[in-house]
Image (cartoon, rainbow, N blue to C red; front, side):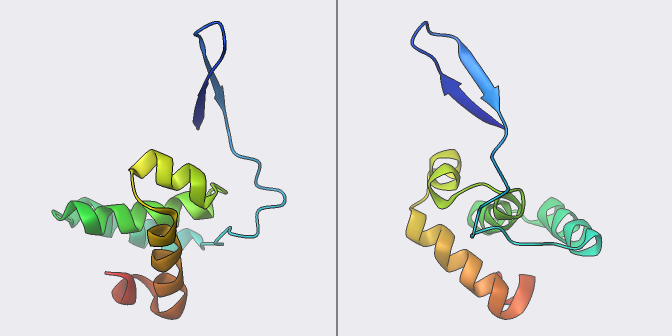
Length: 93
């Protein structure tokens, strides 16, 4: 979910548009389960953020949106994506 502040001060809630997002990562149900299990056991916040980036990309969020949500640089999000695509969770962490 994205929150955008409108001119009148209210918040508008919207979901990302997944239809034309070239950054989307497609995860199987088992991959989603594995990521959630791993996330619950991680104590290092940086490693948890790496998993959050992958989940956010699979939900259609852009690098810019992810960087704003997690307070990381867009380049960092791209690096996490690249590592995940190269070798899954083990390479990412």
